[in-house]
Length: 133
Length: 133
Image (cartoon, rainbow over all chains, first blue to last red; front, top):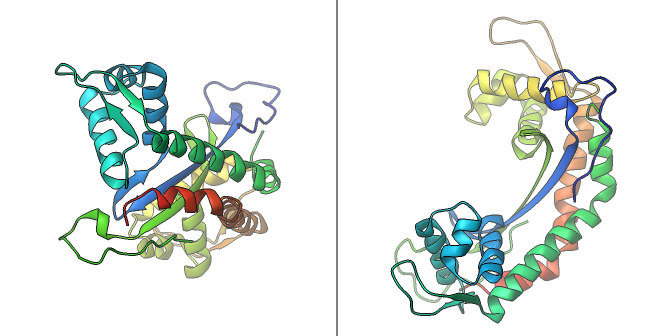
């Protein structure tokens, strides 16, 4: 959810003051220095679900196949049971689908964002009111 | 608040799997590409309040005076009314105190983190239970 403030009556070039305020909530579950579950991995899981393979998911996020594969591998290694199942394929991988664990991670993570934003609506409103319009 | 999981019975080197999971909530109020209010600026305000000057606050955060000054300046420019008041000083600045606006930003921001974590305790518990111990 973006909290949009009124834009000022007169524009003055590319000043950020002319842009509406947008509130971003990000939760990261850290294991040491590693982000076990965070916004990047959750977006990647959603892209895998939508596109049906790691390579297509990577393309949709403008990410290299290698980076996407490493993120998925890092996620799966941090879990008791993997978030994805890959089918055998060529060099750039075959199909890939989410497991029930992967589906749960996406659902819980997005639920956390929505609940956090709802629980803090008053404070967020107070904070954004301190900003220039 | 950190959600701590049990450590496994046997350690195996520096593997992140041996470290407890820690949950981080970060809210950022964006104006375009600029983080108007976020974790870095709030920590800096807290350090200014504690140490009484931008230079001492910067040192306490292992940050250059220049960077701390620029962050405070960027924050104040984004606000209707400034978060800090600086006294006249030498090249590296004199004393600096928080205004009521600065105090409100710290209070609201930390309140948001605590409320978000409380509102999502169940989901966070479910997510961390999917991780290896």
